[in-house]
Length: 344
Image (tube, rainbow, N blue to C red):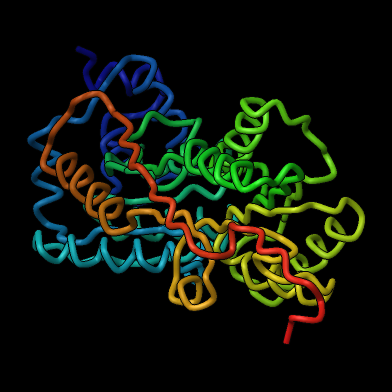
């Protein structure tokens, strides 16, 4: 097993600098910290477990960085994570990155400086997150909702591709053949997986893919008004230009803008256009929206438990936990053809 002295020699720094860089006890120049992290990975060095446990005993605080606090899914995850942390004697510091890499890095720097015991993170970008700053400080990290391709972390997810596949299956069974899909920014793994589920379902039903029915929203978290306006415009355009008979909305915050587009184009939910949405909410039940329901409480609880296991010194290989979603069927996914004279 590599020693701290060997890491110091490879990185060209002192052993004291290696210790500071990996413990987060004192600030270290970013370039130096990167060299130390690279050297420790190359040599397979891990900080002494006893020393790490002495540090984590001082802190009973966990950090949670989510991508959009206004997204009901993340709000529910934060609430459940806070409750699970409290049940285990820990406090939780909540940070909202708005899917902004620079803001995410700032929060990571702050939480590392505060020497939190561990971090739960929804990465703003699967390939560009700055999570290495926490790992270099010896702080365990768990990724939730999205995968991170640049680091080997415990990850907690929902079955995104399978969930959307089930939604498209349902719409096709209801007689739909022109299924449109609205997905989020392409750099997030959730959007990519949900789009894959859509495409796989079309293939399974031998329905040719129409690129005009695939709609990407590039607006990230935080700006609700802009997201609403963009979503409304995108769905209005796809309805008028490509005549879908159904729509799968794969992101909760996009629902309001999509329904506004139906109103603008004279379409009626479940009559002219069948709709399935990702994430459930009180509004969904009230207006009869068929919803893909994620087990937010179980996801949050699993993420905190995995993190606390790492904080306690557990060192098994990182693994991925995937929860199943539930398709709750209501009236919006069934095309009820109603003559114009019968509408009120």
